[in-house]
Length: 113
Length: 112
Picture 1: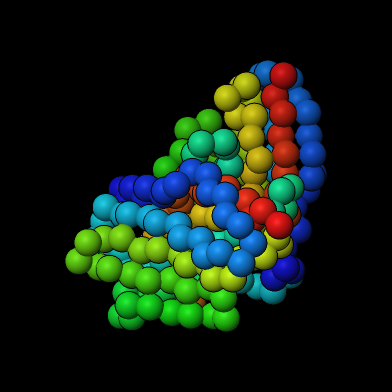
Picture 2 (picture 1 turned 45 degrees about the horizontal axis):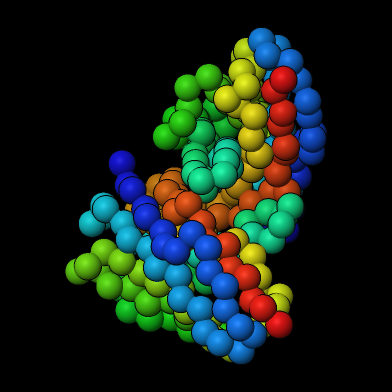
């Protein structure tokens, strides 16, 4: 099955700085890559996703890039704010049928005011 | 919140007892999923359903069974709970036509 690796496991940045989280995947057939944000004690929430037919997608301060050749994708958060502090998970799936997601192990982002 | 509820939200049970967790959705979504979340492992798929009475195994299905007799309900059963099944369990749904998955609020299960 698919194997998704995520780095770093923890990340601390000063407020206003950028944060980058990186993931790699093993199955070249994967073509859908979502990112989830999970605050303490809450459910994971989908914040952005990308499909393999595009290389980059932006939504305000967050962006995701995808390199299919290298089988890696990244989450970029610019102008970080304290409310960005959370655990972020990447995932990969093949966009057919049940679209089962394979998750990375998470990155705990702390934004220091 | 995609109309997903989970019950119970917290449960403490003893080793060897059966446990059933319920996921309920109100929007007739075709696909439903059960994940467990453990430190250092992220979220791992236990079982999923692609319709009434249609279910299949995920990557960590041993020790778990599921049932879906109605579109709106997806039940996860631990036939004989073990301490290794102490975890937070999340249900998720997807519309099916689109791959996005949305999660329920979770159930924290402790097996003593």
